[in-house]
Image (tube, rainbow, N blue to C red; front, side, top):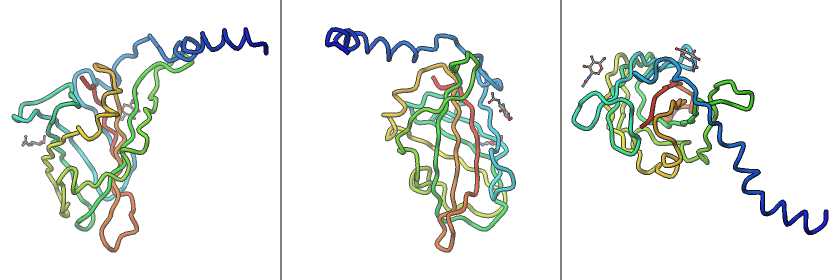
Length: 187
Ligand SMILES: *[C@@H]1O[C@H](CO)[C@@H](O)[C@H](O)[C@H]1NC(C)=O
Ligand SMILES: *[C@@H]1O[C@H](CO)[C@@H](O)[C@H](O)[C@H]1NC(C)=O
């Protein structure tokens, strides 16, 4: 390559790299996520099942879509089919629903740089202990410590949170005890 060509490549490289990132086609909100949160278990037969998720603002008023920059409250209707959990860790992956290279709408992973791995559920969501049997968890969440990730998310788009919880009881082998997929519109 001669130096003129390299120079031209340099000049245009921001353009070359920037162009393919803008998928201007908007995908429809899947599973009614423009109206309400949609959740389902992503693994069957684990220790916890979650049958309902509701979201409120800090005054307890129903909140949707969710602004992750503000504190909000999660109301989880769950069932612990096993023993009490005194310690748990949580891994979260985030996906955005958008058009891929082929033009089809699909869930595309958002880089989180490992920041959402090994979150201490007891410290972060104050959800401990998780007693056996039916559990109604009211969890105020403040995501401000994850602002570097949240600030990269676009408003009024569908996102999917894959939330996996692991048993960190003293005698445990750190087994996965729940996997829940929460599909939401973030504002
Ligand atoms: C919609 O939800 C169902 C489970 O309720 C899930 O299997 C399906 O993959 C979801 N669709 C999309 C596009 O995520
Ligand atoms: C939490 O959700 C359950 C199930 O929908 C509901 O019965 C309960 O009243 C809710 N709790 C609060 C504090 O709103």
